[in-house]
Amino acid sequence: MSFRDLPPFRDLRAFMRFLEERRLLAHVAEPVSLVHEITEIHRRVLAAGGPALVFDAARGARMPVFANLFGTAERVAAGFGVAPSKIVELGEMLAALREPQPFDGVRDALSRWPMVRAALSTLPSLVSRPECQTERRLGGDVDLGLLPIQTCWPGEPAPLITWGLVITRPPDTEADDTAHLNIGVYRMQALDKDRVIMRWLAHRGGAHHHRQWTARGKDTPVAVAIGADPATILSAVLPLPETVSELRFSGVLRGERPRVAPALTVPLVVPADAEIVIEGYVSATETAPEGPYGDHTGYYNSVESFPVMRITAITTRRDPIYLTTFTGRPPDEPSVIGAVLNDLALPTMRRQMPEIVDVWLPPEACSYRMAIISIRKAYPGQARRVMMGLWGMLPQFNYTKTIIVVDDDIDVRDWKDVAWALATRMDAGRDTVVVTDTPIDYLDFASPESGLGGKLGLDATKKIGAETKREWGRPLDMSPNVKKRVDALWPKLSRAITGTSA
Ligand SMILES: Cc1cc2nc3c(=O)[nH]c(=O)nc-3n(C[C@H](O)[C@H](O)[C@H](O)COP(=O)(O)O)c2cc1C
Image (cartoon, rainbow, N blue to C red; front, side, top):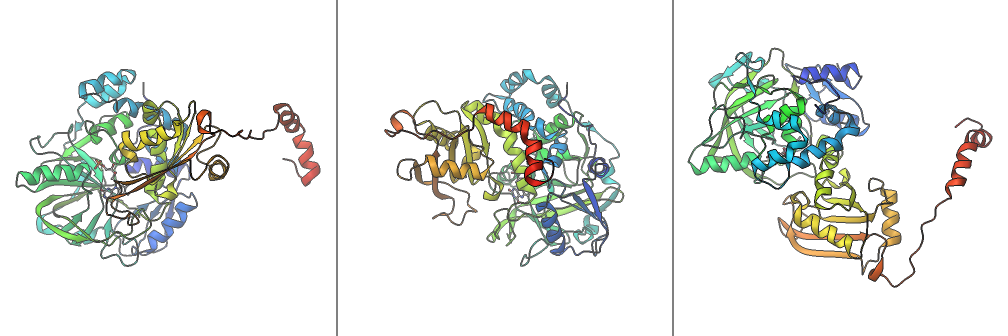
């Protein structure tokens, strides 16, 4: 049994062909600039829900530049191998992975998902002459200038690699270890022809491995794949439990064993069918000031120091494709992916709090800074319990500054509905919760201290029991019989009213 609706995509090209056949990918023949112009075109196409874009003749580029891969929820779902309607089912499987049990317990929790258990314990297949190493530049021949690296926004200090899948492993594991590999997407500022700054935030898997290698006085071996099959890319972005390797999980998503090959100059394995692989070592001691770069908040980040990676090899397929994106004020690609991950996370949240009906993290609020939650309310105070529960139990709500709780007749994804609930079911004195000095995204410059700030809960549910002494309003609704009769009359009525048929 596999949950896939679509055939597996072995590499990025297979997925591109799939998208092109469905007119979900378009070519741009115009000679556009890598500096700002691709961002501006990408931004407009993404905002309009348009196709993935292959820039075939970007100025100065020796290869096609591919952008807007995951610019719609439909393409993200296709990357997972399913129709958009099956995302919540996929979330059930992720929820099983997250059961709070040790690793063997995780396997038990997966008894409903036999193919997941099988796939997680299957070793990736080792490819001896991988496509990703067809062209090789090692040591002194390494030159990042050969890659069409985009400069996204005005005022940025240097070109930025945005879609690199950064692969690391802990020390004390073997070079061909795949069970403990971490893959995360961390942006990289190009410093010169063989150095980049690795901007992994402190809580990321890559940064964790780096601290472990540094504690042993060693530089961290790293491989960065640019352009891989969609399951590998999406696994890198998924917040998987630490016990689950993104690489092995990509095999679960694809329904096929991941194909890997030993890197040429670092003790790691790399995705065999990647378009481009950058190998090297992230220094235990050398850092450099990174930025300012545009970020998903819609602002430039402040300049901060991150470790420097020295590149030892760049390998590519024959005629490689360079995958890129920008991050900026939503909507951007991460915010589109975030909205799909929102639905994937629903089953996990419902396991913690069964009263939860739906959750929406509006992309325009940076995908995590605000949450709107509908509940099946059964007792007084329940909305507050839900707020506390989310802030306290689920780490992904650590940085959610505002939680709005509504009843289950409100569509959390419809601002008009939410505004109506806020306007008619909430009292500013009684129904607001303000907590100060809580953990906050350090990128949030509106908080009084870096990393420490307030949270706001708005209870926009109907007040019941001891919550109110007032007679509560009854929502207006038309009787079902009348609706049915008008539905039946509608074709005729609309012809009479508008002169056209409905
Ligand atoms: C396009 C894109 C760019 C990202 N850039 C960064 C970044 O620069 N630094 C970072 O720490 N996370 C970044 N992320 C988020 C992480 O990749 C993501 O949270 C991932 O799940 C982290 O994996 P990890 O928990 O294994 O470290 C980015 C995500 C995307 C989709």
